[in-house]
Image (cartoon, rainbow, N blue to C red):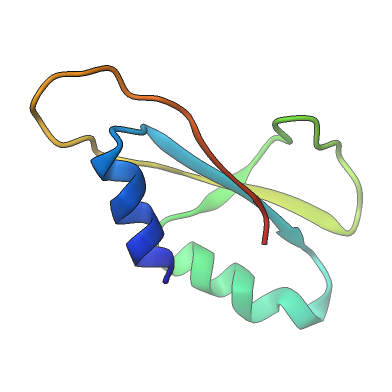
Length: 78
């Protein structure tokens, strides 16, 4: 599912996908999944703030050639 969403974002010519998830142990597998496809921790975005039970992550996308302007892709709470 995550790879499909990243492919969709690339097709839309988005340059980055960002998300927010929890830091609790119950979300460890989700964080590992996101890391495995290239997401890295990043500063809060889109109104999120630094809080101990939340982490924001982002991945830079390679945009396929063909012109056009890329747009933002922010995946909200996961």
